[in-house]
Image (cartoon, rainbow, N blue to C red):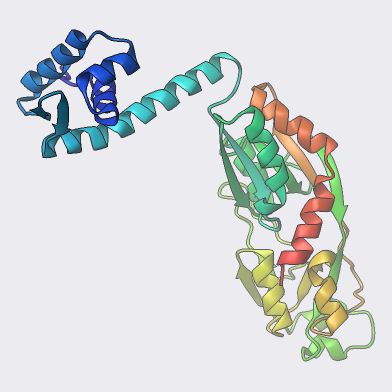
Length: 308
């Protein structure tokens, strides 16, 4: 049986903050005899002296200092737990996980996060980044609760709701020093095959990994995110399609040039998605917020600012 109670820790905390048993009693609305009895009982149960008594003033012993130091973590955890339990009873989740494609930065959601905390400051938020079909897998595997800007149509089989947010165009770009930069006709598969393609890895763990624009037998360099792909293409190490906002500044400065290809990549549509049958208040808030916000414009703007 535990010999330490939260009530005793709360009394120790009040005594230490107020400086005396009587002052702690006033703060906690307890009679002094109750305060004294609780401390004496605690010292007896633990077999240690918690306070040094010097007249009306008291001082924590080294053992008391350690007890209260760790005990305050327990008091804070208990307080947080009470708040979370009340939140759950009122329909608010204790934690909500938002998923983003690795193309985007969670910093673009700063205003939304600040607004959310004004109404749900006891719901913990987590933001995770996945790539390509790994975003959809994270939703179906319950690793995330809401996908913000997931690329492409989700997998068949249902179990989720998806709403299109907008699309981003892609351009075929290479460094001016790359051999493909010298080709004057629309670039075809035979032109690409001798050279290295740079691709972003799909983070899917169970689903078949998605690849874009990779030829059979193609030499490829796989990287974890679009920022790495962009930097390596600027360095002339390989070629590939880039989101137009990523390439815009480099194209304007001559670090990259865009080339016409026989098979252009279609614009990528991004979706807001969540599992069916879930109706927590925090999830509902984010769905409503993302549905009315210019989220794709903000994500794209942030992307263009931070890709370099």
